Image (cartoon, rainbow, N blue to C red; front, side, top):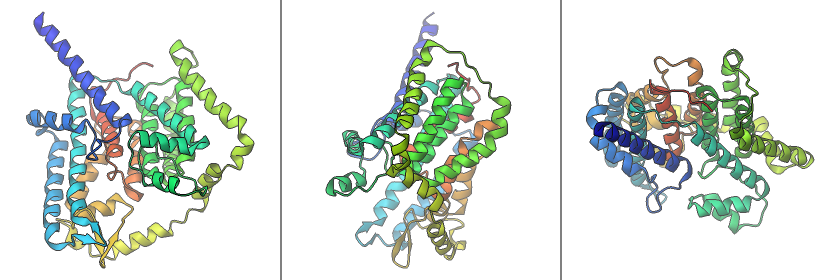
Length: 407
């Protein structure tokens, strides 16, 4: 009897701890004095205690392989890359970024291990998260100053906030939730929505809410890449959705809040349809999609490709890329990882992050598409919480004990 009670108590504690970690990543700000999640200490201590359980898996071996070349490249970069350029602390960034990258994977191993022992439903937390994202997006549409006040309340270090209060022009700021980069925010928010649609059991009402949320995210974040990702998702999922999605129009009391919020979004759009068509955000969002010139990124990629890649087969030059005495922003994690840590780390990272998981249907991998596009033309690893969210979703995909929860 005592053993059963101990097991039940252990399961409850594991579930509580896991929910705290998920809530911390989705809703809480970073730690005030160091830009790390509050839950990182918990996950790190858990990893030290459970190392023997992790070292046998393929993913952990890939992680160790990646870590070796990341740390080796970082160490060697101290001796042959400049430490400062125009006052920018290159060595400090080269030291900080590998810690951020590698520590993020601890969340992946935490959840892949926990989900083998106990199922921890994530659907309802993700739905509340999307609801909160929508609420802030609607606030942004009608009162951007209030949105910035909320970001300040959450201690978000957003450089646009200071610029907003220091000027009086009507420059419109793109929505980025409680993060900094609106492009990366759009990619991961769309990934979360797609994960819910294809990896969880939802009724038609909840699907309507998700699709409305995707539209709201795309318009307010104004990310051309996220629009592209969603278009690709629609092409990949069209036939799968038509075959597998069953439309259930039954209504339950627990659906009331989702119904009211979905109707509210539609009502706001219809009520302001005339002004919306002339609204700065709506026009700017469409202009970014229809008029965005890819030549700027192409010139960056072309410039990077002119650099000798052969020397980066084994090791790289550290996180911060430099050329001709100037810092280069690669606008792609492909280039960032290759130049920073070498081809061996790069291919191992691709295998760990984007391979098809054995035993899982192709449709359950569709949420990976926005993340891969983010990896390709922006960065999914630069903002830690965005990367961790993707790794948590990946852990749920990887787990053989995932059970679709009933709404």
